Length: 285
Ligand code: ATR
Figure 1 (spheres, rainbow, N blue to C red):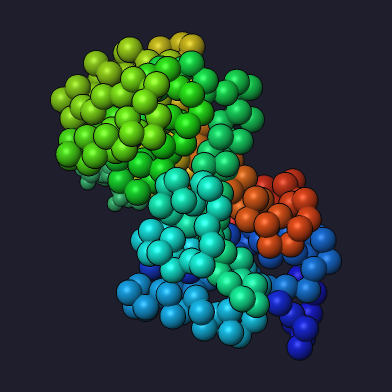
Figure 2: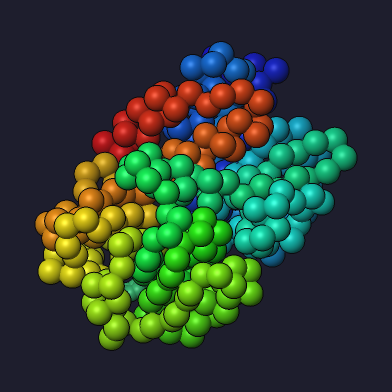
């Protein structure tokens, strides 16, 4: 990083909690590599209900850009003056651009997921039969993205089946060509046997001692498994999928690519992917 001085531009990720975020390491490494005089910090939003006034105050202070993370992505969407089509479609904003007259909101999560998926597996999702585990904020977003990519069919599986049913209805109204159903935990293993692709979007694997939702016996060679959870080594879910013969990756690539797109939106420059990836690996040590 260049020495901080009177010209240094400020960027931040807002969330609650947010101190665990790896975005500061990733973006500061990118600024440094490109010789941009800027700093990126993590700011915990004390009162999420005051997000709109917080963002306007940041614009007033000359912040150049921000990311917004859990649990503020929907509230951020409501606080924007302008939205890109993806933010509009998902009702979620993870990237804010501050300009003199407006707050502009973008969602780069879908791009990050699709880019990481295609990079990992060498193919896209079009025509695939997909199982999405989890229908919380992350699950809903990834399910809408997968549907928009032209999956042939989708099964949404959530512990609380009502949440899966709600997301399923949303997909049907946005993408009527995608065949979608909602199931509860009891049908998880059966559903896994029927699909080509399994996406793990629950919080399982974030904590020490977590047990994967599907064990090795639930997978087979030829299946692709994408875990939105990430860690330096294998996540517990990725380990089980690989033991079962599936091709499996964690969510680090998604974090990288959503961040790279935010970086480009703010700076107008191509993100230095290698540098950002190395910074993430270093931060996970
Ligand atoms: P996020 O925004 O990260 O998706 P969230 O909206 O709180 O967070 O959603 C967490 C997801 O993980 C939900 O799908 C949740 O299932 P419920 O809707 O039934 O709560 C899922 N989840 C968390 N712990 C789980 C567990 N032990 N077994 C199964 N699902 C779990």
